[in-house]
Amino acid sequence: MTNVVLVTGGTGLVGKAIEHIINTEPEGSRFGKKPGEKWIFASSSEGDLRDPTQTKKLYEKYQPTHVIHLAALVGGLFKNMKYKLTFLRDNILINDNVLHVAYEHKTSKVISCLSTCVFPDRVEYPLDETKIHSGPPHESNFGYAHAKRMVDVQNHAYKEEFGCNFTSAIPTNIFGPYDNFDLEDSHVIPGLIHKCYLAKQNKTSFVVAGTGKPLRQFIFSYDLAKLFIWMLREYDDVEPVILSVGEEEEVSIKEVADAIVKAVGFEGDYKFDTTRADGQFRKPASNKKLLTLMGGFEFTPFTEALDLTVKWFLENYKNGAR
Ligand code: NDP
Image (tube, rainbow, N blue to C red; front, side, top):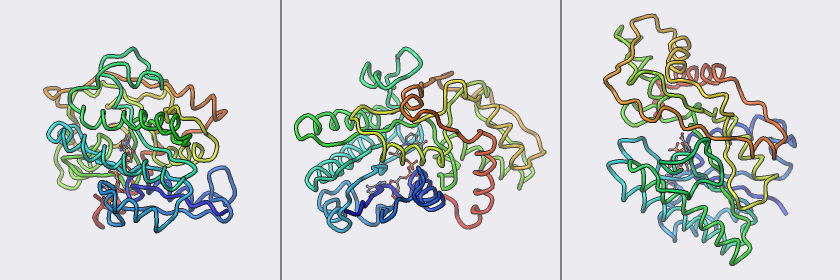
């Protein structure tokens, strides 16, 4: 039987990265397309997954044997704080429809996407796969976090009642080509790339919010894409897997900003606005389970991945990068 892999949210940062890897890795290799395999990258214009009828139509159209479920209402801190009910409800509806229709269609496997920001606010670090439900999430994103946590609950319930092969992946902060580079509502790396580019163009200062000291784990979207493909082919357990670089690969916001300044070629005044909040100092997540299961993985060095992302932004900015 031909495998048909449907990627929901196929037009976003992660979906585009999976499409890139599937189309560029050698056919038949560990992360490349398998002979006869068909990949579908769906956007919301193919069906609004908040709606059960549109979700059913999407499954009827493509008859997927496997689903990588990335579609979600995603946003930065401000949007999460302002629209808590919308984040809760839209994501609950999307996830419930995708999983239930997959069950009805006897889909062989579904991998859904959580995030390390759904973990409890007060928790012992490093984060690992056993700690998702061990306390309330941070107040600022509780709508998004509870909706995402519920996917893990649903996966267990579908397995226990119906024997479904549903699981989830938990990435840390993602960056790469096709990210949302909006100045107001983006994650730290794409936001700073855009700001630095404008500072260079307008000959103004490049100002980074906060002290630059907090540490974060960033995963390059093309690396994450390979990890999703590995999960699809080689991981068959309901328990989630954290998809991340190791704790020893944490980088500070200052290191991120330094690398962006270099990659953009910015030579003007560059400073930190220490009156702005820093957020949590660090929230390390362990990738031990991933590396043990995979038997090792070579992550792209951070500066190399950042250079590639900046290059993509510079080439696409005029064409309307988000
Ligand atoms: P993007 O915001 O880049 O893309 C979101 C995707 O979801 C788009 O393809 C969008 O379609 C689709 N989508 C949104 N709403 C609907 C809907 N109602 N019906 C159908 N499709 C919809 O997301 P990312 O690629 O950044 O994120 C992918 C996954 O990874 C998400 O589940 C997210 O929670 C998770 N994640 C992301 C992190 C990050 O740093 N970005 C960190 C950790 C986890 P369209 O293009 O048509 O709008």
